Length: 153
Length: 416
Ligand code: SF4
Image (cartoon, rainbow over all chains, first blue to last red; front, top):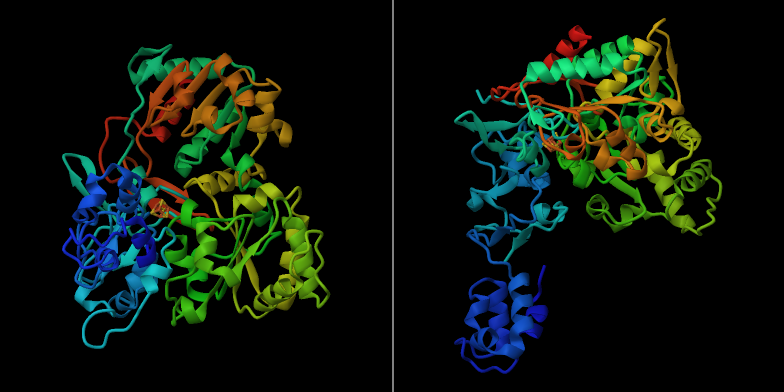
């Protein structure tokens, strides 16, 4: 997973403000949170000397279709559908102990993760323990993923 | 009620698969891993029915196949890992009748382990036992995250079970012993990963036995003794332990003796079981079926006259091809030209060759006769045996015009 410093290192570091942010560092922070896109950094896109960095950065910040409200992203290309997250997610276990919690296909509509066509899909994200009033920093799905396909931004 | 199907993608035979069908095709597969989805959606390049590279109908192809097998003195019949038990039985019958060499992929995979299990030399258990009871799970030379993607989530690590209610963090310890940090080792975590040099498995086992006996565990590669003692301690405390044996371990052991000694020791101090990480969905079924009929699990040669059977390395697919002792071959659901060393497999292209498979493969392109069959587990039902020896009934999902491999083999048998 990328971190802010890694992203910052790939930016022009000129603080030119063309992106509307006051510094390249601020841009890096927002980029990590997917609040801005790589292409919002105009010099990076236009200037030949940044070409390599632009490509690297675009790779790190893989374009994501939908970032869910909790900031959860599943990278479809990396997911192998093993279902570890489906079974490990404590919310899945609580809402579907006999199905997902026992290693089998989910039998409840209230699960957060479900494997469809070989790739895990997130739903009911409002149930995620990282969300809402009593949020905690749960990492069950991230830690159990063999391919690092799940990310929170 | 949701209708669940069985995935023939690997020997886990996951039985909780949902499918969506449109126009007689599988369009969506839920709950299966990526590997299973690819298998269940069918082949991208179906095989055609041919004799001497000319398209023909299935009756003509079956007649020609029967001719080849009848005329051969020492035919080879090989494959079987992707066929139902019913088809495998017919294959054994044909081998008997034609005095054939008969072998399957276990011959260079999990064969020795399965043989030892069937001969009661190794204590084993079912995947369900593992889910309900196992607290210490060792992946030795095995990387199920790639070979059997749902192994950890369905059975061995993450699910709750009757005696494992609190989940993996508190109730289970997963350990990886491997020559490289595999994806599975990554999940086990650094403290539970034991990286050993190539082909050092036997020596590591010996050291582990020493540690379990309260002796200092020495290795020629200077493995951290404290770490081995730590491991021994975890294994000793196991209430229900499992060693999942992968191909990495099988290939590294010249003989199984060190494994027997380790298992004996482990069962002196705690309770340990062994699970062979079988790849193809019904390889274990073939071993069982042949064992029931002959007392051997693979590598046999029937005598066409008196029905006696010989067994040994000389009758394996590899040796019979290397020694050029076969004069025709029938390959079912396998692609030896891509999976065997070319120096050995090349000989196949020189003899009359019959391939039965749903999809086109390299072996098919060199075959005298190719007969497309229904994709087992998707276009045909039948019985199969999971890696743990439990029988599972495959369910047909969609129709096809192709005959099943069982039907093709029955007709070949009749024609002979
Ligand atoms: S783990 Fe094996 S049986 Fe289960 S869905 Fe994947 S390929 Fe199919």
